[in-house]
Length: 576
Image (tube, rainbow, N blue to C red; front, side, top):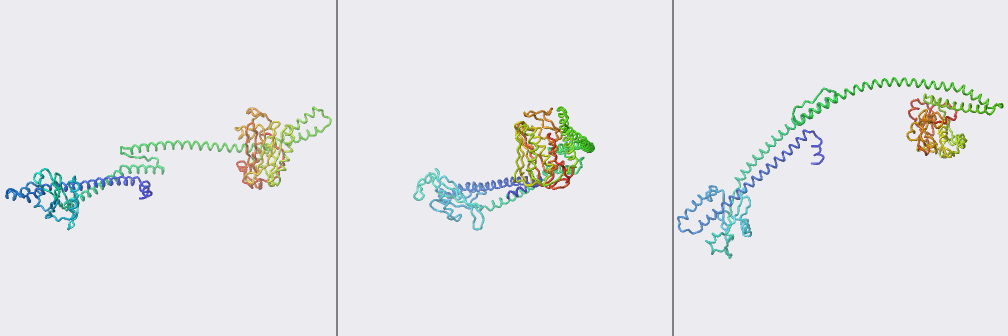
């Protein structure tokens, strides 16, 4: 039997079949072994009985030989020897009247074979007894001419002290007779037919008893397995199936007073607990449904309020730009007048600076509102990124030189011509470059790089500085609206104050515009060691309208863009 077959019989079958196989197999081996042992012991007893019979016949045979061949004082006593010895022997050992046994004597020098025909094997046994002085007997089992089994017992006749007293002058051949000398051998033939019939009958009874015993034992084991082990398990399975179909009122009913009853009670306790937990979960789900409904209504209201806020901010910023443009225009006129004093010129410059800052703030708020409302349009044209970076560096270089900051640009010549929105891209890089110059202390370095990204269909614009850096806990929040990096030039965190001016909209606009252009912003910064902002964008962005949810939730796939209305490029806010 292979391992797979044995595993299928025991490991991949039902519990009832496993118990039957194991109990039945073990019982069969036990009964077979015990009855086989009994059979061997019975056969050994029969053999021992035959050997004992042979030993008991040696002495009468020798005595018979003496009465027959030795001269006695009177003829009458010699004639009565048969009746005398027959009376001394048990009935089953009568030598002449019972044909069950046959015997003969073999002398060491001559052979008397009147009772049974001798063969060469008999002389071999005689030689064996003569060679081994300690050997008293031997036997062999053969079949006679009729084909019946018979046992030939050979018993040694050795000289004793009594024998020497009568035959002190005797010799065997040329050898003097001494005590222990082999005088001859008694050969006794014991037919085994009757023993074989008795053993066959005994084996038949034994085998029948074994079969009946095994059958009854297996029947008892089947009943035990079926009604004591399997039936409670099947009942538990039926209850489990009913519970799985939704019949939660079913309970296990096992009254056996053993571990199965304890198991059923534990099963029922588990069911009651499950029903209680299910009821609690149902109540919790009902409450959650109510809360979800309330949250849905609140989200709808917030969405409406957010739309109102966006509309309000768009309207207000648009309306604020008209008087602000007038203020800036008249301030330019006043700045060109020749009759202003130095104090008045300083006031006019303050008006111009504040007006420009306010206009930048209004433009940022308007851009952010348009992005969130999904109304920001794209104007895709072909341009070279190197020219764009060089133009922005020229715009920022005067401010960098005032702070003694080294500003450099580098563009990978392998970058092809971009098909993007140059105004939005310029706004992204300008915001990052403005922040880098503003947050880099004097004597620092700012570098702008244009590289091919890991994806050959994308580019990576990098703005790297040696500024104050951004703490790890603030790196996720600086892209939120109206949030600044709260770090001093010395690297100290100022969570409650602002070291630098700004509205906190610059990086929010960078993030949203990067999504609008189909890219993303990656920040790597360490406090006190500077920051590295990487903007990864597709080289070719196809013009295609997109939903607001797509703009805000995730960047588009390469090759997707937005509307095609042109937006005039302008420097955005310089805040973070």
